[in-house]
Length: 178
Ligand code: IMP
Ligand code: MG
Image (cartoon, rainbow, N blue to C red; front, side, top):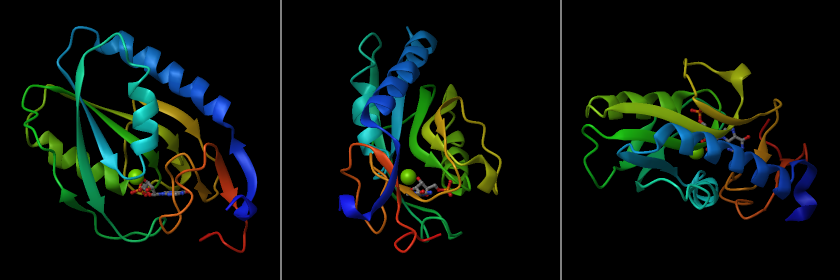
């Protein structure tokens, strides 16, 4: 698996430091609020696990959404295939994502969640590729802005592989989808 990686872009240590910074900002913003952290599976699972273990000074619930969509990096219809388990009416929502690329997945999720009348919705993503955005998304907490490369690791996959890498790296060009 390591042979498939051309270059490590963000080390485990760099990611850990960034996750800590995001956690500090989130802690300051949500202290005393009725917060529900909404995570989009599967890509965000690794980030969520690390982020939530750094949010030790605030109380919150965690709920999960599963989306299906066309191939990563291509446009395709987005659908919820597993919905949240609990109501979110009047709750403060923090949607945790691994990556905002074209923005379609998140745009769809935010539209659906808004209809349920939460008190607020904010977005936290570890990675953003702003130049490939087709739909406008305002992200409140962003970890890293990525170069225009297909990356894997730390939850991000290619054909369901590489999620377990502790760093984020670019695939060798012969393996990369673009
Ligand atoms: P979009 O913002 O609707 O384009 O969807 C973003 C989703 O596409 C992310 O949550 C990832 O699952 C996937 N994705 C986009 N770029 C990459 C990448 O470089 N590596 C792995 N997955 C990616
Ligand atoms: Mg994702």
